[in-house]
Amino acid sequence: MPEKNAVVIFNTLTKNIASVDQDLIDSLRQSEFLRLSKEELLNLKDTKIIVEHQFNEIAYLKYLLGKVKYTKLGMFISLTTDCNLKCSYCFADYAGAFPQNHALSWSNFERLLQFIDAQTSREGLRQLNVVFFGGEPLMNYDVLHRAAKALKAYEKNAIDVALTLITNGTLLTADRCSDLSPYITHLQITIDGTKAVHDLRRPYKDGRGSYDEILANLKIATKYFKNIVVHSVIDSKSIPNIHALLSELRAHGLDEHKISVDFAPESPSQTTVATGGWSRTAQADLFEITAKLYTFAAELGYHPAKAFVRGPCMRICANAIAVDERLNVYKCPADFGRPHPDGVIDEQGHLLISHPNWYESVTFEPHCVADCVYAPICYGGCRWLAGSLEKTCKEWLDMCIHGMIRSYVQARYPMKLDSHGVTI
Image (cartoon, rainbow, N blue to C red; front, side, top):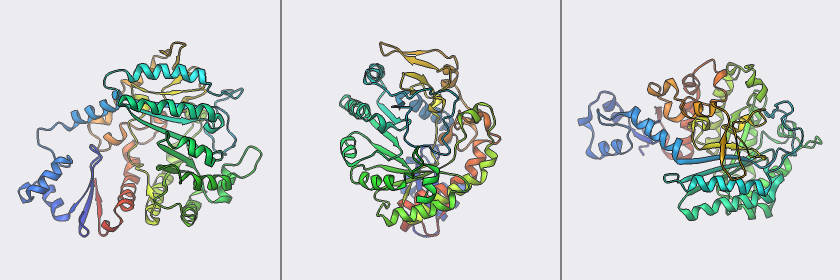
C-alpha cells in the first residue's frame, strides 16, 4: 500500500479496498491503460476495480445479490419479550403488543429446528446466520445456551454457522461467557455514553443505572469472545458524550484488540413509522456526525464496524425471517408485535406464509439498482423505513460514506493513510 500521494479506492460491487498511486488514478481516469505495469493491471482486474468493456456489471451485481438472497438462511430469533431495562428510546411500542411477557420454550425451539433442518438440507444453502435478541435474551438463558449449542452443530454438515447475541450486557456473567463463547460468533453490547448519560438513557426498570454492571461484564467478556461490538445509539444530546465514552473504554484497556465500535442514530418507534410520522430530514445532522464518530474512534485505535455496507435488507431475502417466542414469523424484527404476522412455524416445523406481501417483498427490485453506485452495498435500503424517506439512499450515503471508509482504512492501516484521499 503506497504511503504518499495515494488514493484509497472502495469498489462497492466487490467490497474490495485498494490503495494506489495518484499517477495510476490519473491513468485510469484517462483510460491510458498502457501506462500500467502488467502487475498493476492484473491486480486491478483481480479486484474488479477495472473490468473488460464487455463485462456486464449490472448482471454481475444481480448474480451476487441473488447468492445472498437465496443461498443464506438468516434468522432473528426472539428469546423473550421480557427486559430488565427501561430504555428511554425503546422503539417497540405497538400498543397492546405484549400484554404479558413471553419466553421461547425449548419445545417451540425444537419445532424451529425442524424448519432449519429442512432448509439446510437443501442443496446450495450453505450459510446459517442467526441473531438472538429480545427483550433481553439472557433472561431466557437456558434456552439460549441450548439453542446456540444445537445451531453450532450444523457446522458438522459443512454449513458456515454465524451466531450473534445482542444483549444489554447486564446479565453476562463470567460463567455465562464461558458457557456461550464456544458457540457465539459475535457479541453486541449497547453502551450509550459514560455513566451519567448512559444511566439516564438505559436504566433498570426500578430507575437504577446500569452502566457499572455493563462495563464490568464487558471487561469479562473480552476474555472469552473474539468479536465484540460496542453499539451506541445516539441522538443530538448524547453525541458529545460518545467521545468521552470511547476515551474511557480505552482507559479501561478495551482497545482495538478487544472490541470494535458501531454507532446508529436513534430509530423512530414502530407506531411512528407505521403512521408515517417520521421525517429522516430531522436526522440529517446525525448521519454526518455519525461518520465523524467513526473517524474519532479510528484515531483512538478502535476498529470501527464496516457500517457503510448495509444491504440487502432482509425483507427481500427469500430465506431471511424473524421469529418470535410463539413462532409467529415476520420478514423483519421491526414488525414484532404487529397484530397480523406474515406467517407461522407449524407443529411439523413448516413455514406457513399467510401474508401476500411476503412474496412482493422477496421479488422486490429497487428502481435504482441499475444506475446507482451504491446499489451493491445498499440495494434500496431499509424497507421498513422506506415509506418515510424524503431523500434517496444515495443522498444520505453521499453525506457520510467517505468518512466511514476513511475511518475503516485508518483503523486497519494507520501507517498507510498519510496523504490519502478517498475515491469511490
